[in-house]
Image 1 (tube, one colour):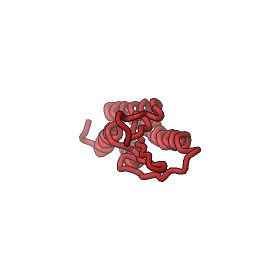
Image 2 (cartoon, one colour; image 1 turned 90 degrees about the vertical axis):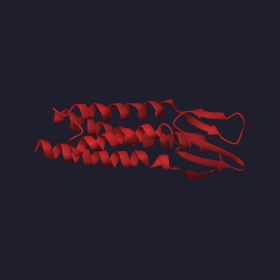
Image 3 (cartoon, one colour; image 1 turned 30 degrees about the vertical axis):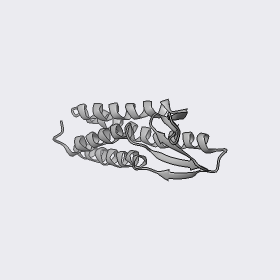
Length: 144
């Protein structure tokens, strides 16, 4: 299964999205208050205990779905047409991840003047989409 390059790409996509579950996506501040966007929600980080401003369950669910589809796509190596479709669907979900992330950020910051500080976790879905595209090309090449 992991003998082909597309399987390696899809495995890295799954690993990237599992790491998104554990690393912060973005920090932002308003005056002296610092907030952190993680997969679990937007949290006020300079208070004790940590105060959750907004939950992000759709973002969490989308992350889990992308991981499951990436792993499922690896195991569909005998049916390349299904692999192609699942890979395209996964790329669409990754674009949807960024759209949903933008909606959450807009809702959380629409009334406040905030400064955004992107973290490393914000580029993982972009890298995942690029790797999924490379996997798509490799699967299509095998099918041809």
